[in-house]
Amino acid sequence: MTKARDIADFKFENITDTGTEGTKVASGTTAQRGSTQGQIRFNSTTGLAEYYTGTAFKSIDAPPTISSIDVTEVDSQAGGNQTIVITGTGFSSGATVTFVGNAGTDFNASTVTVNSETQITAVAPKSSFLNAQEPYGVKVTNVSGLSSTLASQINVDTSPSWQTASGSLGSILEDATGNHFTVSATDVDGDTVSYSLQSGSLGGLSLNSSTGVISGDPTDVSSDTTNSFTLRATANGKTADRAFSYITENDTLADGLVAHYADAYLTDSSGNNYTGVKYGSGTVSQSTDSGTPLGSRTVTSFPDSDGYIHLPTATIITGTNARTITCWVKPNASLDDNDYIFGFGLCANGSKGTFNARCGGNKMGFMGCGADYDNNGAVVYSTGTWVRIFYTMSGTTVSAYYLDGSGNRVSNWSTSLSGISTSNASGATASIGAHASSPGSGDIGGCNATLADFRIYNRVLTEAEMERLYNK
Image (cartoon, rainbow, N blue to C red; front, side, top):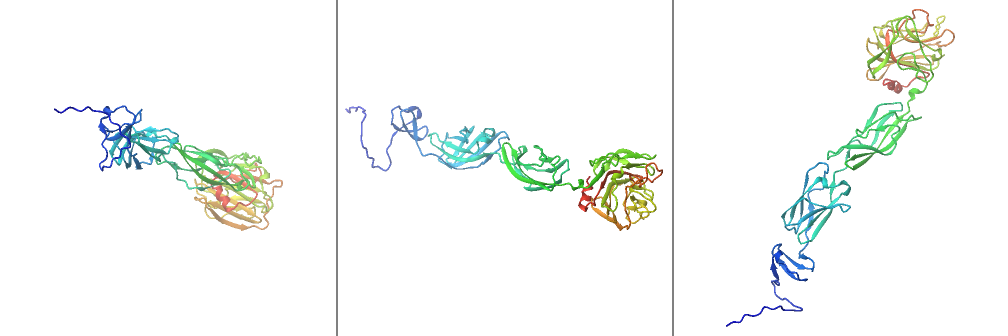
């Protein structure tokens, strides 16, 4: 009879295993684990060898590796979930995925699917990715507790992209108003872009933070001045800076300005306070004209005869000194030899002592009292159509110009009048809408036109200045 042998514990020291298949250890499920510190076993539930530290079981396994992920940027404002595919080695069932932020603000993927030992698909809410914590690393932890992290892989949103090229935006006059420039940036994530001044000066202008429009009244300058500044475009906390500049041009149209009647009426806005007085029995009236080259503005209409604005004689440029007289003109009807846009000086004994704009036959003409040039210019006046005219004098040379519909200066005619010498002596007059004649002297020839922006200069304007006045 065979006697059953007692099962006993054996103690070995310094064991050497010379076999080729390895040493078999105890095998069992997780539920069958023992509690002896140092024990080594194979966990048939996890499929991993493990050992007990006295407080916890740890698997004997190699850590996973991460080689790449398929997402480098998350739009946190878009809502919904972000799916990220992780590629590597050693991934095991039950692995977790953690997104590691810059300041320890880690969070786990909401779902993890281990597709194979080399691929994991993780899903997480887009809103969990915070712009301030980018770039996020990706950490994979196997059920063995061993993990691997691939740092700095995911950014949150992108910086906006400037559409406006860096450098000069252009130039504006120092007395310009309204909108001048517009800068633009876009965001590929669709986030709203805002704009701000980062450094430098806008030269008195203002930046609309929502639209990128730069507008306002620039600071007055004594010479052309470059304003340099850096603007920042911001979208969902991401920024992009760009350097710009523009030139504030010194407005020379204020230089040598003797008088300025913006609506060709009584008030002088030059600062010299040369206030006009309405004269004559004909009706001189103001109205709003919405069809001027500059849009709606106040204008003054003059009758065909005996209705005008009398100006102080101080507005007369005397002798052969340089001058420019300019204004907008819109004929109320066809103009004849007795229609005058302005007149300055004194006509006595047939002298050439006046400076009058005469416009017979709808042409630019000149009457210097004893020196008439009525039909030397081309036809420039047309009933109901605005045109900008310029009369200049330099020495004894009188010239007339007009601006066409494109704002280009056109030379009409020029002539030398020997002996011309305008005076503001006793009896001299200055008029808008009539020739030079003493106030109350009867029918002095009217204008039969509507006028605006009447200016008197004590110098000859340059061609560029004439073109700029087209926009005044």
